[in-house]
Amino acid sequence: MITQFDQLDLTKSYTYKDYLSWRFPERVELILGKIFKMSPAPSRYHQKVSRRLFRFIDQYYIEEQCELYSAPFDVVLLKGEKSTVVQPDLCVVCDKSKLTKQGCEGAPNLIVEILSPGNTRREMKEKFELYEKNGVQEYWMVDLGNKSIIVYTYNEKKKYVGSKPFVEGEKVESQILKGLKMDVADVFKE
Image (tube, rainbow, N blue to C red; front, side, top):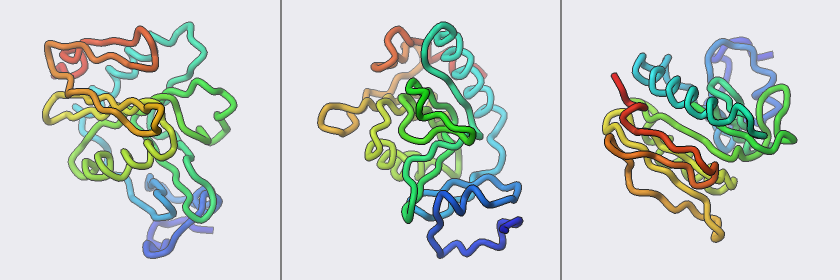
């Protein structure tokens, strides 16, 4: 049994079964079998923005069929040799058959990732490609530094189409969760 992060061989590929057996305090993500240690605890501002987004989306879904989760929450996109387990900042799952004791198995309907120093490249490239490949219907990339939100919507060609960046003075709106709209300025209040 692996009880310390240092016991892992970072050059090796791991499976979802391996991931479930680990018993150490560090949070990790498994992307195509490779281990990625999560950044240290997010900044207070990151937490504030995440909390505001959570509250707004949660309020919107009070009577809906979908469920909203925040990190740490395992989203298993692939199992086997190229296992992929991510922990998005927020996710909305409308197909309850995907929910398990550990989290979600399969693509959530909406994933929100908040860019922080140290994770920007992963969210902008690797996770973007993973979410697109696995059919996440909508992906919000929230940029704290620029106080902007880009919404990527999955189309019939199985590709993301990106919005322009939504900035203060505008409303960001979900394309798949009808009626979900919020003032960008409210998201980024200091």
